Image (cartoon, rainbow, N blue to C red):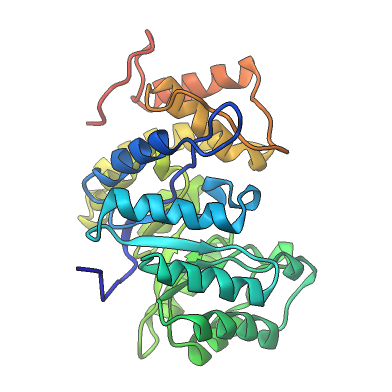
Length: 318
């Protein structure tokens, strides 16, 4: 039976989208990747049609295909969060309707790129209202850093939540520990609490200790096991275990999210190739194939994280 109630919490990886050398979608490889990530104990949902799946380079019909493949592969038991990545609110509505018709459980609403020049509460509310008018699926609002113009001030977030009741969570990428903690305290303190999911991979341990409900991250496409163990350790207040796991997570995040961050999911594909989980690391332009020295750094980070032996053999996360 389809999922009728969804609370965003726990570990929600944003999966990658494998391509063939000709840059068409590699359907068999995508299915294997979906199964590999979804089988990890502690994974509560899967996110697709987001940054990690190179959504900016995918057509509307390809996004529909990605959702269809995921729903057919995972069945009704695994919640699917479908990204709504659009420059305009009318296109966002079209994507939202497609996602609802295709069996998505929830939506992840990206801020329009035009907000790089700033936004007002009225603009932000209108964008979310338009999406909510298209479907009653629950919505996760993606919070960007305020410094880039696309982030929402706290009063704007509260206005969105007040006006659009289907907004039940935020994916918090504000990049400010102080602002992040304020989000958690404020949104958890509402009469109808709103979940806060961290995407602060550079300081994930600290973020979870602050009280996040979970995490939604592209690096979960590679290290979902480590994310799940770290989340469980923090929830159990086993800080010794959490600190040890954080060291392993940090070994990957410092490499995956190095500058330019545009290549973060490019690096994750190369990591899956090194781990024997993906054959072709192709990315769509303007992204290009990584050089040998960067791939060497990715290999070393996987060894440091205990995921790859020095001889190149993949290790099971323990």
